[in-house]
Image: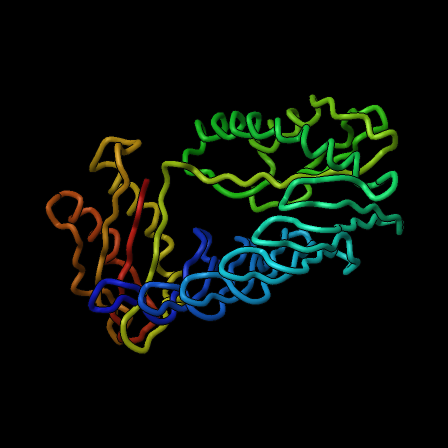
Length: 328
């Protein structure tokens, strides 16, 4: 909810378009405070940690959705001290330290076969390998070459959005890099988006790449995350003792209609970001009454939005609801 000064206070939650929880936190004077957790659209935890006065502090853990975890300490919103990476089998795959948000000192990488490579960093700048770096050096060169995929992934996303303008989510690809630097067995191995034209385009882009020759066959993977620059985000909050989460499934069927109302009221894509806020009362019988809209200067938009909400049936619990729909 919001205080008298318009700043967020107390518990806060956000949901994915499919109704699954996206994030949960608490606010004090408009800044995050205390435990924070966010989830992928299909359920697994994406990130977990704590905030103090709006900054990340303490132990944080980041999850890639496929079982790999990166965990360590954060001070004043920057990585600080020891961090470790573990794979989906719980095996340690990397460890090292950060200083003021950048890798610093000695880092060690562990292969699935038990081999290891080590290297040194100075304020984020890679200095040297310890020994011949049989694991590390090919990975460094390949990761550098993979930066070229950013342009190709953006092209694939633009093409996919011609058919699905609000397409958003992630695609995880796995493949093998052969000893000569070619790519083979490129496949979708995870992500929130189902296989389709976007993933097919990404597979073609990876298959066409020629990477630095590692001298042996090594596995590679990459997670591509996509979010439209012109899209919608929404937030559902409640006043009183009722909880917002049980209301979300009843509201989700109206979301597409609410978006259509907004798009019909203005040029699209919009020249600037905007938002509308709806307020209504849910009675003890689950019916919606007293729907209000802010701003209310567009009568046709207001009527369209109200028409989407009034027929909804919520769980029978007296509740005041506030729903904000933002676009950019």
